[in-house]
Image 1 (cartoon, rainbow, N blue to C red):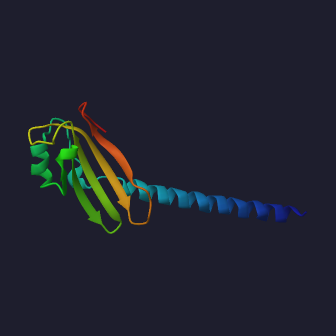
Image 2: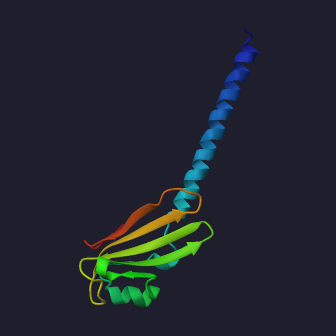
Image 3: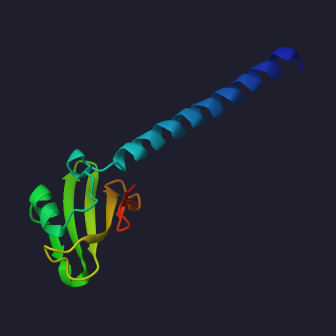
Length: 125
């Protein structure tokens, strides 16, 4: 086999790997971008009571305080983002949240993803 044909074969193989790698990096960056909370939800949650969150974000879209959580929902062309505030009791106004989660649901059929952005120990993630 001539040396040139081995070189061309190696070049084609390298090109395919490079193309695949670039595609993977692009999709990963899109996914990371979609898993970022909207600007209005990027606050320091430490020491905030439920009534303070309601003042900042307005009335929750889902008030399920009997199941110990509240949801604020942000819809866009790519899907839906949810800020879920979890409470130890009934999510009363004077209560502190125990955990705050950020969920993303995309329209393209990908499964939901979530990130813990606050855990009741006072640390923001």
